[in-house]
Length: 170
Image (cartoon, rainbow, N blue to C red; front, side):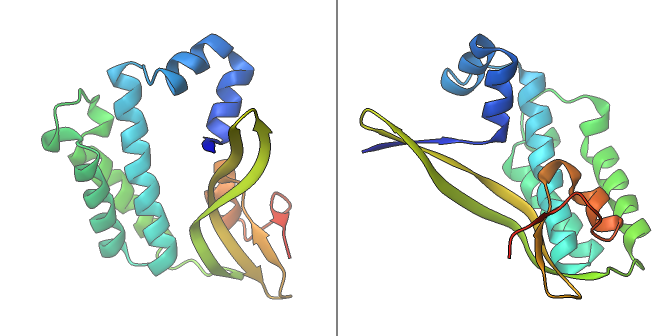
């Protein structure tokens, strides 16, 4: 049976414009600027995840650089970059982000970062459609509750010590 994976990005794109979503996610067509911005976002996301796992700026910047190279950005590829995405700028901003968080105390334990999930959703003919993605962070409160942060709010939630915008899962 054929399997098709759907995530929040695909669902948002379809809700906005079905034709644009088909061009982007089925035909895999987009502008070079969108591709490089997405690649830079992936690299930064991996660096942030390493920061939350280790709380070590050196390891987080190394993970950012590893992903930046793998994605073929800047001097490691031929994709056009705007100045804000050049390595010198991106790494300086990221290192400052880490520095500002160096001494923060969190009111919870981080259980998992970038936890991949996939759930069966529906079947269409001979195709299984699954919904999946990555949970930015799973945390355990002092009371023992496990909470999942919504991806678009992870930093705000982690830095606000898990307020009301989390999903209790256990």
